[in-house]
Length: 394
Image 1 (cartoon, rainbow, N blue to C red):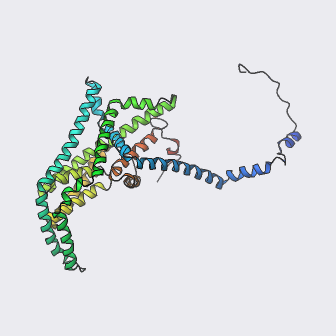
Image 2: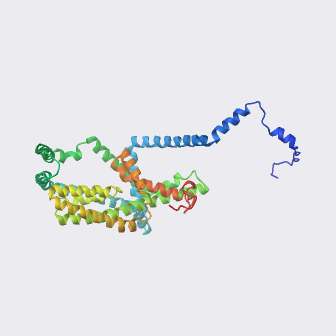
Image 3: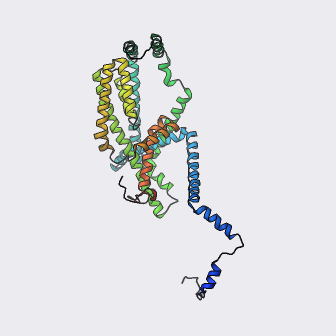
């Protein structure tokens, strides 16, 4: 008996006849209509309708967030990039702090090291392109002359006028000033890039310095198991993002070095820019390695010859096979546990929404979301909808 409760005598047990009369709903007061409405929503079609409305509501909320995000790309994209980079280099900050360095000094060292690395990559690309562009332009024009001879031997007819038109267009492009000034042609886009870069640097600095404190602030409304869930989700997300970026960077370096050595042996110009391009495209799963191989083969075809282009294709295939079969499973481990179809959908959605930046960020974000689901109800207990309900033999 509760503190404010009062003992009451038990009610008399009604007879069977009285029970039968009392439990029968009265004909008036709209009881048949209520029973009909309940039956309408409790059968199969009613449950499907209820779930459909719930799904539509969730999709509407996601669409609103997506629309707002696409309108605020100047802020959203730098913040996402800063989050991914912070997850990747946070172990360096933790290592420096464990060695006794103050938090502020450790953050500045890690941030300046990252900026120096990115600046070195850009400097290498620009320097190599400027030094070898004239040579590449001359070899490309000579390659078109050689390519014309091979095209004339094809089983279908291609007129000389069509070949000449393509050649003149290529010559006009290579000899025009548009190629050299294309990177800075859009003043507005350049300004947006510079603004986004500085936003990313500032946000990255605070993520590295005060990331755990920021997450604790966001978890203040939660207590008990909800707070523990927030801690698990945050830690799992950062581990997944950091592991993905570090593992992909290692794989990309191996790909760039291997393909770059092959290009240098074959004698392809612009080896350094092509190697850097291989490194950058490796961060796009599934299609990045293919795009890098196609670009390297095309440059080799127009600059050196078709036989060398086939050799480059073989080198790219061998390096990608070694990476996919041996290096990636060891380096990446269980970081990226997504089906290739899910990766393809994430790539498509990210590219459509944000462009090339979305293609790079979509897969690690999708992998982090899936990892958060895997630890939703416990360190090794996924959310209820993601658990196995039966023995899966497929």
